[in-house]
Image 1 (spheres, rainbow, N blue to C red):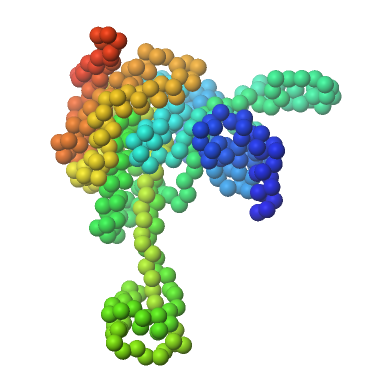
Image 2 (image 1 turned 45 degrees about the vertical axis):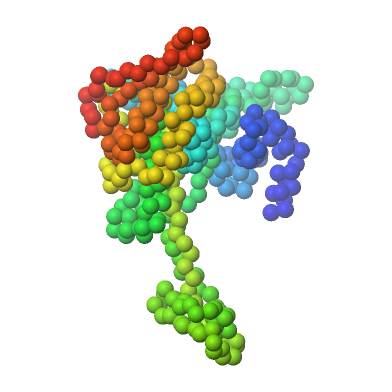
Length: 428
């Protein structure tokens, strides 16, 4: 452990931290620096074989998973996607290729954008995600890039004075999402909850977390939310056995202490005490259960129009029993003050603008259309919260966009417009 600490305090490691642009978040910067340091020392990112894109578990020097990195050029329809299934999809079925409502190859921005919206609304369900640049031999590169890197190393070996802008493989830009431990697919726990119902307190906690997932997905108009790409961490109550002396029990004034394990209770009287300090007694202490949600896989969100072609891309959580329950007062109090403030909403749009414009193919006109969809979603959501609707009633509201234009004296004016065209299939 001391060796690891010394490594992380080394000059080279600190230099890596100083080279990272994201300096506004020291803890996140430290994670990225640890990942770069591990790659420098041969601990390479590990490709995740599930899914339709090239994504990687990024680890630290000790092999502990730190994050999931999704390079831009290895996205489902990126030119270097290592998954051959999407290549066949593109070649054999071009008419159904991609999502017509999304800007191609911007999944990494969508991942980071979802994290930004989560942070602005204090939902705390999206693992922190930022845009970073990494290079590693295990990433998928074109053969010519690998040959060029190999040639540079060969030349440098024979001619040490030779200089190159970059000796290694090209840097890859992508989303870097912090890894969450102890979570499982929602499908797993949802099936368990059907058989083993939660306690009222835990059920309420789960409902509030679920509503935050609904708020996030609806605002960013996530087109790929199934019950297999959001996570639940459920720490069940555990009974911890501990030894307590009789004297400690007797000192408790007029209380009945119940052992849940064997359903026995001990009653003590404050007026009469006996000297039994040397006799230990076994008691069971119950650790409280906790439940948490994590919204991952947000790369297919922020459409520039509502789905109106073949598929509707519905939210699969809308079929859950939790979706039939009206939004709680906790969710209303948490979300409405911010979403009801148009200036705050425009602040979110501005932050997303600064994030999305990092992409080389950034199109301001398409971005404005993305924000028009998001404003429309926020408009519907605020109305549903005020009217006491449920998530399933929310998704049944008509699709609307709110377009922004320059008004009188440089002020913005907003125009509301409903979408008339509907997708051919409404159930998929």
